[in-house]
Image (tube, rainbow, N blue to C red; front, side, top):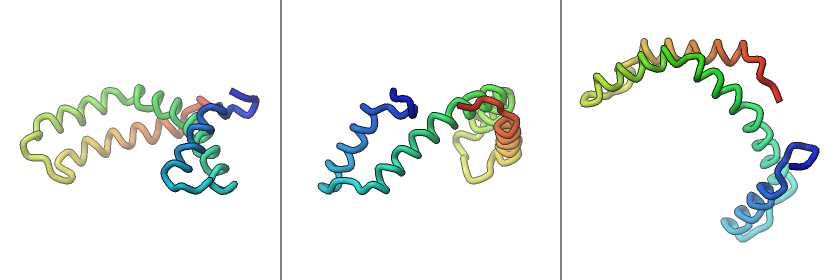
Amino acid sequence: MGSSGINAEYMGTVFNRIIEMSGVAPTAAELAAAKIAEKTTQRVLPRLATAVFQCKDSAKVYGVCLTKNVDNLYKNVCGPEFAQYQACVTKALKSSTVRR
């Protein structure tokens, strides 16, 4: 990894994949967007993992509800449980101090 935190090998892979898929070399804007996406992922994933871990109890309640209703799943079947889990994760993310 370079001093900017961007993995050059990864960026080379992204560059080659774009060319492979489109047959055209990416523009500078597309390369910049790929760098921003990688930096965002590196910053957000540790915070999200911490938040999800902190909310394991409400995640379990939501999972149990889904399991009980596995044969009759429909939108919002476990709405209150999901809302509780979502609120927990949101609160944990807002209070998170894990920064890169």
